[in-house]
Length: 112
Image (cartoon, rainbow, N blue to C red):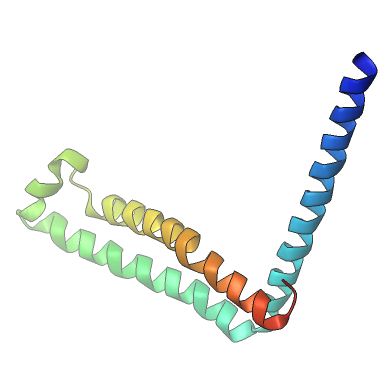
């Protein structure tokens, strides 16, 4: 009985390692594609930087006004509120849109 359980456990570990190898191959492929488009790679980081700067100055502007009563339950800090909201939005967007686009791209390339 112990030998059968050990064999099943070893098979599950082997299957897991096989799947991790596949995931690693997809990550490497996607990273090579991303890095090959250097300008797009740079623009993604610039978009994050300038978006953060704009939100920072909007937060400063709102902090000087008396309109922050709506943010009182969030600590009256618009910058943190907006930054967390945008991060969650980006995470959800990646989960909903990027995966389907990736599947479509791999189907078009013939790798899926």
